[in-house]
Amino acid sequence: MDAERVRAIVRKFAHVEETVQWGENLVFWVGDKAIGGKMFALVNMDADGQAVMSFSAGPERYAELIENEGVIPAPYMARIYWVALERWDALDPRELAQLLAAAHARTLAKLPKRTREALALPAAERRRLVTDRRRLLEQRREAMLAARAAEPGTRSGKPVQEQPAPVRELAQAAARPQRKTRRAPG
Image (tube, rainbow, N blue to C red):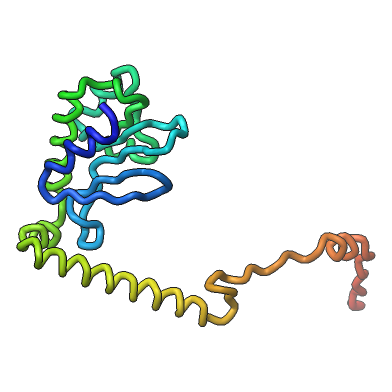
């Protein structure tokens, strides 16, 4: 198994989109991210010594899969039952294909109703919806950045932090003699 075979397998599933994110990671989504799609598998294209692939295993198979040599809890995603393959031969190719199909089906079933309805649209209408949604998201992002830049007390959208008093001033204040207060006669 390798990245191209995995890609060929998952591209056969319904409503699969792919993106390159977080460096050189090929991310597979059920539905487009712009309309609420969710990712179900990730292939690491970097030769950085990290896991070669991660995918959703589900709570039913998670514990069983991580007992296999070369299969570990996926970094950052183990809490939602994702596993990572340290090498391509950690699982039998047929078993991996079945696990990817199950990950896809599980993720599709968990999509919000609105996203499932969008996926049921004809292809041309769905593409138009995705394009419109991406345009809207970009406009919102630009408006947010412009509002941040216009806020007083900010520099290029980042809040200006107060600087602590210099150490010398603190040392001088500590060295000053304390004033003695006079007591009123009484």
